[in-house]
Length: 239
Image 1 (cartoon, one colour):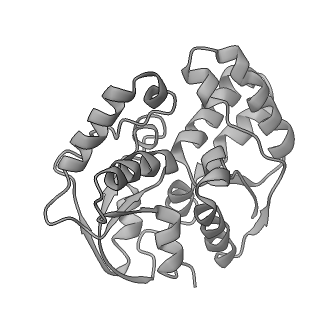
Image 2: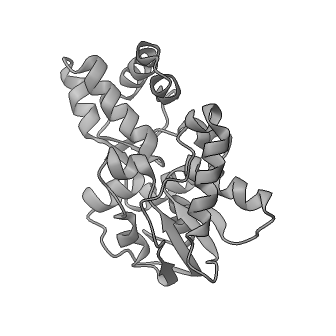
């Protein structure tokens, strides 16, 4: 397939390894990777109540990603916004409808398109997986990425007692309500099964920044935040 990679703002600024790992994994499955001109998905404006201000970002995406066999991003949050925005703002355009249907978060693509239920790979660690809210509620993926992690030899996968708890990031929510946001992050981290795992895995960099920031503030070295794509890449998935 000819896949166009949507890097996301946080991927460009804070998580370049997650973007590179995403491209590397997709290439291992024989796909051709293209990197069109990038932009924001428009979610900060949209979630702040300025929906029309998000429209130009969605239009830019439509113009530069149209014609792709698939679009893949290392973020369920951005993918959810792109799908929603394409249909809300440009739903009368057949290409916008088609593009919304072929835009995937990485684990969603691996599971639903590649049919990769039990990938071959090896990584020695104890890890816990955080379900991001947008991945769960907008894309209805829930904890399906665990199906990918469960196939990694040497990886001991732990569980949150209350996996549905939000990390408190929520994009602009963390800016407008910082005290509440931090309290939610601390509650989430208190829920980690003891003893602490080596890794905290998530499919959204925003969640990792939020929880990793709280861990750093508390001078806690475990668990180490790691994007799902990075772990799958280091484990050699697709080789």
